[in-house]
Amino acid sequence: MARENLNLQIHLIQDELLVMGSMVEQATLQAVQALKNRDINAARLIYNNDRQINEKRYAVESAVLILIATQQPLAHDLRLLAAMLEISSELERMGDYAKGICKVVINLKDIELPIPVKEFELMAEKAVNMFHRALAAFVSEDFQTARAIPADDDQVDQLFIQAQHFIVHTMLEKPAILDHMNLLLWVAHNLERMADRVTNICERTYFIATGEFLELETEPKDIQGD
Amino acid sequence: MVENQESTRDYAISTHDLDIYYGNFRAVKGVSLNFEPRKITAIIGPSGCGKSTVLRCFNRMNDFIPGARITGSVLFHGENIYDPKVDPVRIRQQIGMVFQRPNPFPKSIYDNIAWGLKVNGIRGKLDSLVEESLQQAALWDEVKDSLGKSALSLSGGQQQRLCIARALAVKPEIILMDEPCSALDPSATLKIEDLMRTLSVNYTIIIVTHNMQQAGRASDYTAFFSMAPDRAGVMVEYGETSQIFTNPRNKTTEDYISGRYG
Image (cartoon, rainbow over all chains, first blue to last red; front, side, top):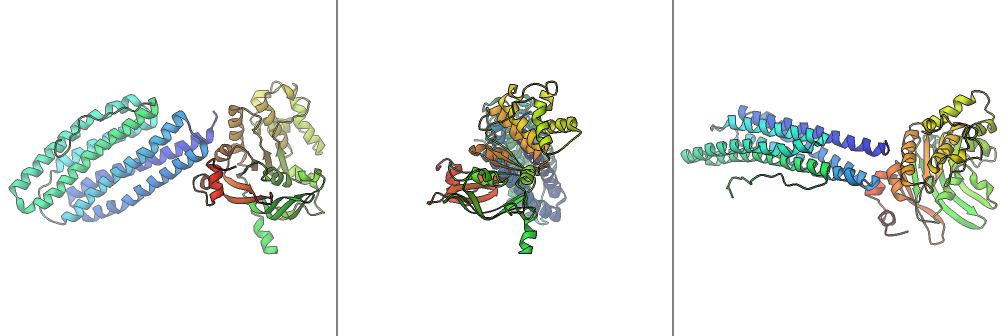
């Protein structure tokens, strides 16, 4: 096949994205565990490791720009490279969500408060599961799977609403820990946003495979419900 | 001085303050450049900036042009190839060249390779050397059943790969390519570029190309040449191709690669 070098370089970048993806998965699951166990040291470690995710993002960005500048990619190659720029930035932001959860763990110190651990764990598990399948669909350019994944976001949204209710209810009951409970709202928000970003990755996969931009987003559901 | 020569031995070719003249006209001036071994280096720049002149100087092809001479040095394994003791024929065997237009001999495919070997005094095992060269040039599968056919019956792209096979047959270290794809269509061009990539595992390749995009696609390092006000060619910038094409240090290079000059 012609253009072996370009194909090889594209695959190398794809591999980097997958490595970055598994770093994000790990960071997310570990961040929720650190919250569950109130393990500040673990949280600090994950927080600091986010730098490596950011560095990977710049490495991917730079490699993509070099390929665009030197290889004149067109059609499918060009869509793939453009999508990889986008996806690397999604992954970087997802890493930031995990980092944000760790920041909450650190800020909560050893203050006693009720945490909707079960909801958080399930949200993280479901979001990571969606994310994992979205990356697999991206690599195999399986646009039909990519199109189906965002529907699972509903489950994460449902858990988000449950966690939110619990947190708000606790805030009303115990105004003394309102500020700290507010931090937990951010944890819920971050996990919910993570699943939203999976949708963006699926949209990119659809674009790579078909050349069409398709909005896969379902109804916007955020804290204010607007 | 000895130390300096030692340090140049890591490079495939090193030029030091190279000036090239045609009679009184200085066509190229002040080129000091080290070529990385087993890498592809592209020389790019606008017409008349001395790219081909520099390339031809690396295997003493300019010797054939009356009045051509150089000052400075061109070191190959630490030896100045313009030293009077040096045999230019030996240099051309170690530093081969592929030209702009494919120029096979009007002989069979087989003879095109075997002749070069015979001329260089290589006897015996011709069949296997011919096959090996054609394999390396990614042409074997297409011609193995028609080795007796005229080389002129091949397509342009195949002829150019035959010329590359012919250059490889005498086991050079360096292959100079002077616009090797300018007479080829895009698909044959990409085939030659893939072949260059494969060959660069074992050979140093220096390519002059008008086609800047080709330099981007096919090379590891890029040297950008331009013309000084006295019309002498000068090297403006040299670096990794990825750097030259994304973040050139020099404004003239930037203007050239982004299509604003030259």
